[in-house]
Image (cartoon, rainbow, N blue to C red; front, side):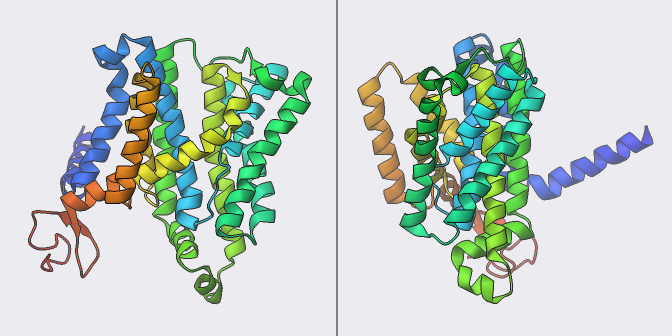
Length: 349
């Protein structure tokens, strides 16, 4: 009993001194609670369509964060990110449909196949930068779609591979499995970017020549970024295939690659949380406005233009800068109403 009280007090202290001191951290806690309690809400829990929308939102959140991990932090502009998603989806579908491997086995293996795809793309693209890299990566999912159409008996052709095993029989349980995986993987991606590895990736994005001069093998780290991004996107593709019970050419479409870029720019690249928040805002909004086909496309375009004009760093970094300010001395963030830094007590502007 005393041990439980000790850990409870320790948790309370951490919440009081580390979490509740910054609005952004409070928002993260509220986001976790929202995702976990969402099926309990009467409006969503009693509506299978709404539950389906937010389940797909969780899948696409993993996908968007994986793009930011590669293109945002290392500057390797990938316009063919749907390749990883499609490879993960098709691999999981083939393993489940032909070899009868259950989802808990087919999804991780499909993600590893996506890692292999990341290496295959990464190695020949290492010498390319900017526009050349973007156009080269854009070609790979198009090539894979051609392969899918060339082998319809094995890969399903235009119809894709259907009849895949569900993640769970209950839609609510499926949602919770996918939501917990999303929260876990996105936390891991944020931890990677907040570690020494993340600092090196960010440095490569800012000035690769300077990083090489410091004696760091940038080729190795860029390949690692391609592999990690491919793994997380492959998990998202495998979850999509088992949830929708189909893996088709739509998982490799160019529009999906551009969609993830738009999500990331809208939410704010080089943040991980930005693309995730953007997916949770834009995807349900556009799905709920599906009855207004022409109008929703126009509205979506106007929103993106406004974000690019007035919030070039993205919506969520802009909001964070409004409610928090950075200490000029120790670079720690503080609540915007504070006059002195909570760490070094320096005066805040």
